[in-house]
Image (cartoon, rainbow, N blue to C red):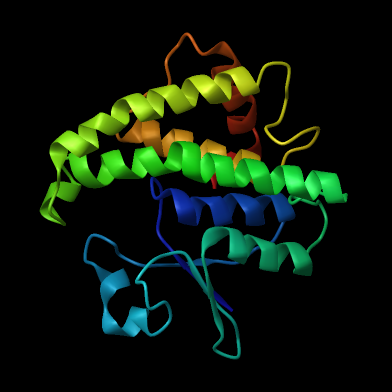
Amino acid sequence: MKLYGAPSPAPNPRRVRIFLAEKGVDLPETLVDMRKREHKSPEFRAKNSLGQIPTLELDDGTTISETVAICRYFEELHPTPPLFGQTALEKAMVDMWVRRSEFVLMTPVSMFWRHAHPYTAALLTQFKDFGESNREHVASAMRWFDRELEGRDYLAGGAFSMADICLLTTLDFANWIGLETPGTLANLRGWHERISARPSAAA
């Protein structure tokens, strides 16, 4: 099988790399040059019609896209350690916090990236006022996560999970594009420090 991705700071391919590192799965990444728009080429769109990465191509030619779907596939193949929970409640909590990481934080981060960052200005039509308006949405989301992490070691409960991976990669990407985590958010910054210390975070 082949895993198509891109190096950091691209957050979604990094999520899969961290997940595989936690599982101890060695699957080399086939890099797609996003600066050259290779992910939008007809050849790549034949694998993922949305022209997005990561995409996993199986030996029979079947392709799986969307980060969480790829990770769920590997969870079934390599169930230990469990990263989507074990009990019904644990699985529900992981799913809840994955979606919250994506919708509450990643969405405004993405809108800022698309509409206010100078790099993307060359790639699409920007609505800069809208893009800049997402700064406060990001800050508000960070404050909310800070409150929710009070007294917790991990985002979704008592164990490291896909939810932690999603939040970590989102925060790191936000910081990379200039949406820094405020120093006053001790819970969020403490969580980030602990999760970043895991060897997999370097993936």
